[in-house]
Image (cartoon, rainbow, N blue to C red; front, top):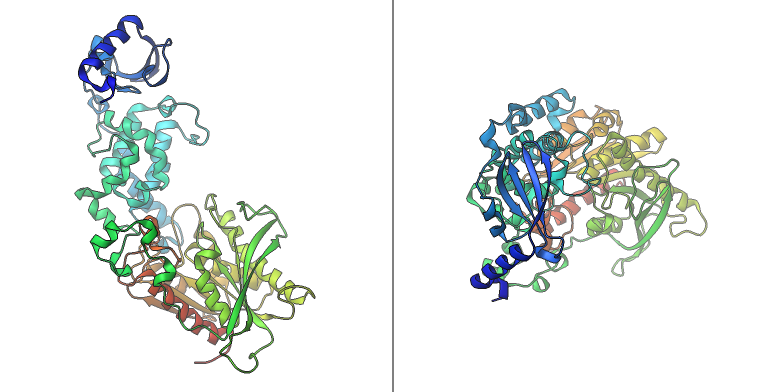
Length: 541
C-alpha cells in the first residue's frame, strides 16, 4: 500500500499539511454558486489545490484532491441546486420534443425526415442546454479555462442538464455515450450531481459507456442504430468471441463471399480533379479548388474469358460515399461494378469531413461527383492517360450510400443541368436527416430529374435511414422517370466494409439485423449489377 493511502499515514500527512502549509482561498461567484479555489502555493503536483463549491454559504463539493479533511474546518452538507426552485418548463426535454415536432411539420419534406431519440438528444443539447448554460454564442473550441467558469445561468443550466439526463435518458443512447456529439458535455456531468440528477452517472467520465449495461438503458440500446458484436455471424459462440483477442477475430475478407463478377480484371488509380469554383469541403484529400478521387476501371479480360471484349468504351458511374466515409469503405462493391465493364470514379472529399450540414455544404458535396465524371470524360480524350479511348461519355450514371445516396440524386440532377446524358441512379439507403439542412438539396433536385432509371435499395432493419425515406424520395420523382425499390429483408444500414471488430462502434447498425453485413453487401452488389446491366450496359437478363 502506498504511504499516503494507509489511514494513519494519511491522517499524519493531512495534519502536517494544514499545520505547515495553511490553505489560501480565492473565490469567484456564479450566482447562486460560489467557487473557491483552496490552494497551497508552496506546494506543487496533485495535492497543491482543491476546488470547493458553495451554494450560498454552504460548501457543496471538492474537486481536484482526495483531502476532504481540509473541509472539516468549515463543515460539509449535501445541498442540491434543485432545492431552490422547480425546473423551468422551457428547459424540459418534453418541450424540446414538441418544438422539434413543430419544426419538422413546418418543413416541406418533414414527412421524410428521420427524427429518432438521438436526434432529440442532440437538438436539446445544441438548442437548449448550451444556450441556457453558456449563452447563444458559446463554442467549446473557443473555451478558455474551466467549463464552469463559463456558466451564465446556473439554475437554468441545472434544469436543462437534468432534462437531458433524467427526462430524456440521453446517456442511454449509444450514439451519444460512445463518441457522439454529447461527448462534449462530459465536463458538465460531475456538475449534474449538484443539480439533483437521479441517473447513476459514473464518477470517472471515461466509464460513461458502462451505463449502457444498465437495465433502464436497454430499451434505447435495442432501438439504436449503433452496431453490435455478432459472434454468430463469425461462426463463434459467445464464449469464444469474448475470449478472442482482436488479432484473432476474423477480418471482413475472411467471411465475405464474393459474388461472381464480370469478365474484366480491374485497375485502380487516383486522380486530382480541379473544381471550377471554390468549395467548402476541406480535408487532407480536398483543397478549396481541387480534390482527390479514386478511379476503378476495367483493365483486361479475365484469364478464363475467351474472345474479344464486348465494347471498346465503357460507361461511367460516379459513386458518392456516405458522411465521413471514403471510397475504400466500399471498395469491393466498386471493384465488382468495374468488373462488369464500367468505369467508377469516387471522390475522397467527404472523408472525415467536419462541416455543418448546411444546404451550401451538401450542394458542394453533390457537385464533386459531377466534376469527377467530367474529368474522367476529359481523360478519355487525352492521348496519354490511363483511360485514353476507354470512356463512353454518352452513358453516365451515379450511385451512393446514406447521405451519399441522397447526394447522388442531386449529382444526377446537376449533371442533367450541365447537359450530361445521365441514364440512371442507384440510391442506397438515402438519408433525410433533421440536423442541419441535409435534406434541402434532395428535396429540390429529385423532382427535376427527367427520363432516367432510379433504383432505391434499403434494409428492412435500417434504423438510421428507414425504408419510409426511400419510399418518399421515390414519390417525389417526375412521371418521366422509371423507378423501383428493393427492400432487403433483415439488412441494416451497414453497406460499408467494416471488419467485425469495428461493428460495435459503427453507427450503421453493423452486426445487427437478421442478415449479416458481408451477406447484405453481396446481395447489394448483385442487385446493382443487375440494374446497371439493364440501364447502361444494355445487357437484358
